[in-house]
Length: 150
Length: 150
DNA sequence: CTGTAATGTAACATCATAAGTTACATGAGT
DNA sequence: ACTCATGTAACTTATGATGTTACATTACAG
Image (tube, rainbow over all chains, first blue to last red; front, side, top):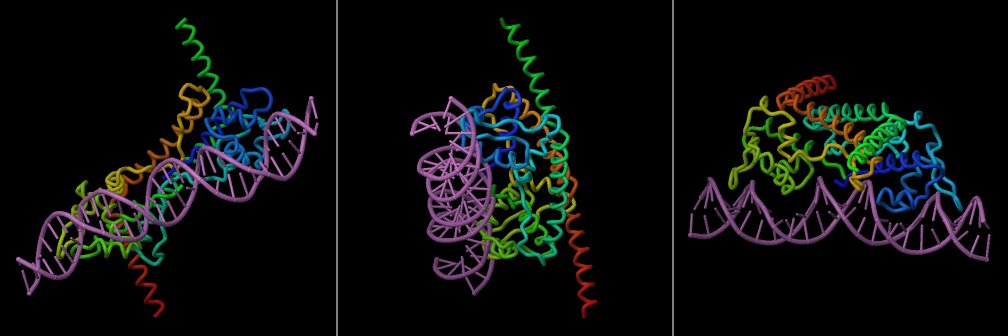
């Protein structure tokens, strides 16, 4: 299965946007994320439609955050991406009348649903502000270590 | 992302084997699971190596359960399949030095790890015997409804 | 001992989906 | 006008599960 890295990529982009004054272009974000400007636009499109970011064309254009960091959770971003599949395993419905299949799918389905619910709840508990804070902490620690070395 | 249905498919096969006297051939299992005999062998290979099932070649050969239903959990089966990926999203390591990436990957990584742990624990709590019991309950209910109709 | 039924496995084809790429239209500022 | 940017369609590539073909191997029946 090819994994989906969009959520991670978008978060990376958003934090860089938060840490930068003025708009960032798709090309700049693509460099930070080791990807392609078109992929950036395609992925950010959902966030724009959800009102999480704003994009401007032409000279001086690019992407900017449209909402306060504290008001956006990772779940908002996940939903803006179209709520892509989180669980890699599925439960096929080859024989809807087969009682064995029903028993198996019920057991697996509820376990998968619970794990997915846990994950979505977890995403809902984390705001972009919290992530930015964590980033700042790491930056401070990083600078301190750098000073120790010199 | 193409989803992975092996766990569901294998459970389906094992319950049918439990409900059937004598070995079942790959061809018979493939019919029940709407798939291909070679796919059945390929998928069951891990279970054989793990000692969960036994296979015999030649006349009268096929697949049989090698252990008591109560002694096998869904997690044993999941592990025998090679513990395939459960979470569909990944966390790329494009820039290991980027502190933004570290903060994002830490938040997502721990959420994903927790969801995966929950799911694996859930699988470990369910035995094949429990599934077979659930199947029997459904079968009884099914027969009763059928009688009511007639 | 030959024929048949089964697994074991390699090799290749197919399919689905995220990601990468090219091309071009559109809009905004200089 | 020119240039810089997004918006988007269309196509290609990469990856992994699944499907298929082919053939070797093994076990039993006659």
